[in-house]
Amino acid sequence: MNRRRVDVLCLQETNKKGAKVKEIGERIKLFYNGFETRRNEVAIAVGDNIRSYVTLVMKTGCAEELKDEFYDQLANSIKSVQKDDYLVVCGDINRHVGQDRNRLERVHGGEGIGIRKFHGERLTDLVETHDLAIDSTFFAKTQSQFITYSGGERETGMNHVLVRR
View (cartoon, helix red, strand yellow):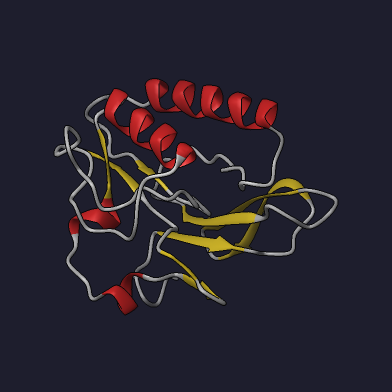
């Protein structure tokens, strides 16, 4: 990270258990959170010059109560960041936000795949409430470039990063 001048590196499917912060190199901290089942694992490596708020995004397979609790915690974390600070929310944000940007022009750029599903609607509500944007929807790509998962007849474009406008 230091050699390439990368300040933040988001990692998915890390196979780590527990929630910890540890030094992994010169001036780099690794924040990670994984369950005993080694599912829902994400990690974020952060250079020491970045003030960071790190949280875990639940995968679709989690119980609804955990998702509700997560969205409440995420909303509180977003509110706690000063309006003039940079804010980037990243991790394993797997939500189908679709192509339609009707009434969401400020938060959704119109690029995507398919239709918005329930959890995608929940994500767009969150970003609209806190004046964030779903970055991947603002960049034109071919469909094959947008697809982050393909299995059988299913194709999805997910793994979003949210940024403050």
